[in-house]
Picture 1 (spheres, rainbow, N blue to C red):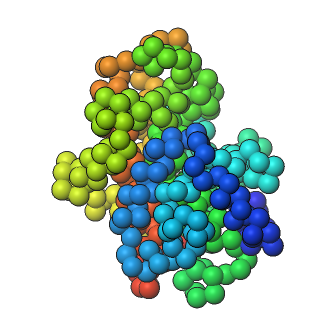
Picture 2 (cartoon, rainbow, N blue to C red):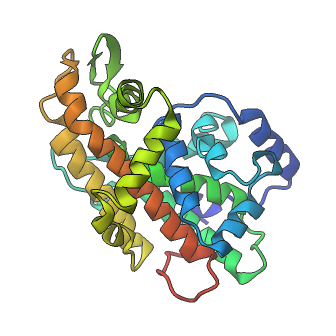
Length: 307
């Protein structure tokens, strides 16, 4: 059994696992920023049907009162714990420098060449695990709560363009620069700096206001006619391949373009990239809802998942 297949297996130390959740709630996290992951999961939860809503509530620890977004940063918080250290490669994809494409067979592996060890492979794996929940037994080979949280987090990561970046600079992590007056790197600019600048400049540092604006743009605003195409998914493998391809394409056209180590990024970069970041958060949330509605719904319709 491969590493990804083993991830999320039922643990005999379930009470300790839940205690770990409780201890982590409220702590800060890094990634597609705490704010980015929270908004992705809140968008998704608002779009769930009744069956999926009930399943999500049943799988979450009681401490969070059914709020999926409260634990969407959990995979970032535990990725360096000994038990979960091997999950670190699941948060990103390294692609050949300047190729600007994603090939699953070529790119979805860890540094040792283990297949499926990337964010696209992780989404496939946890989707497959959650499909067992529909069988009524909540298949005890898998830890369904872990699967839900990993899937929800990785759907945010695959939509953050610099999480599908170039190998040599680790998705922009080694491109040190300044964001306005503050030291940063290109990866962190896309993870969090653009979001925090938007919150500060336009939304009174209120994430709820930013989330309302994003939701308005895809419900009846500028992206509303695109939502059907965002949700289209015949099978999970082709979908993760498409989503990762979108991210590396954006990384090339908007992330890396015109950026060199040591430069200062400010208004021009921020103004032209802010809407892209917000759209990717929206797409991640809409598509996460699509997956959860498919795997937890009481219909036989939906995509086929890898097994």
